[in-house]
Image (cartoon, rainbow, N blue to C red; front, side, top):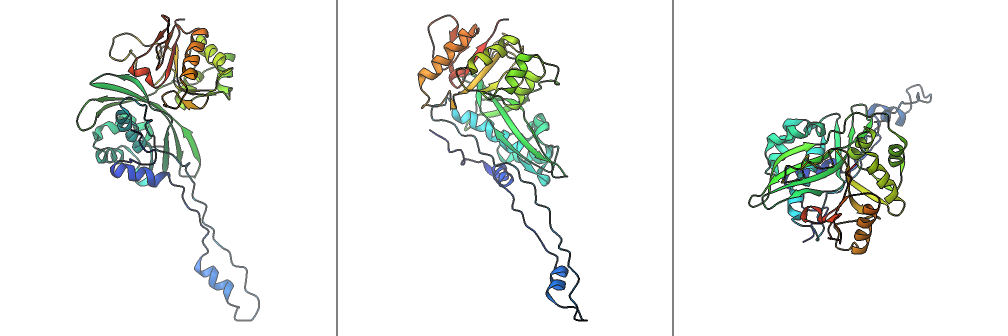
Length: 333
């Protein structure tokens, strides 16, 4: 089943999302006194003094955003929908709905524990209005009773002076199986660390027009904590493909989901690709040959551990439900 991207906004929180993301109208107002002065001659018959019109500053406009929707080829797309609607609702607000308390009320309207709002506190303050765009939703893990949904985001915030800034996090949203819908149990935001001096490989990746990076992944690279093997592979792949990265280091589970084995991601030795040449890996219309060719190219670029929606021949490759929606490339050194 395909979920309509502009539909399925849930409850009161969804109404807030729609209301906050719509462009605001601008107007120029002239004071009644100035209008009357300019419309009637002076008592002496001389031309009236020039009336000063008071113009209201154009209200700042937030970018229009689009609700995330599940492709019909998704595995358990409804699980992702619960997670993405929550993040969209938390990250979109106006001055009257900023802060943790108001965000908790929005979560309650979605049937989600309001206490979880504090776990995404960074989304909730910093200005007078905000709008959030979910870039992608991929699995960090999917088991029969629990799931991790990784959600890279971009958020725009307007401050009291009218200045607009852009920021973003990748959220590891944890859920447990429940009826009638899966239940959110935790929200873990990315923490890339401070920017540092980086080498030419990192600079090339950050400046590439063929490598699309969400804010958290861009910050990962800028922090100097991504291994050169990852950066070289991304540059090599970008010579043949345009790639959209979902997760590199921060925002990914520390352990391979459901195990005690450390993931390569938090160590800066892996990256996930959710879109290749402009088409999502998970989409039913994406050619199989495009995805398998990319998986093979990732192995040729040095990855010892390539996961994706298709199981290819060779010990380098693996496939499971978690990697149905992206291509994982891990590096040992």
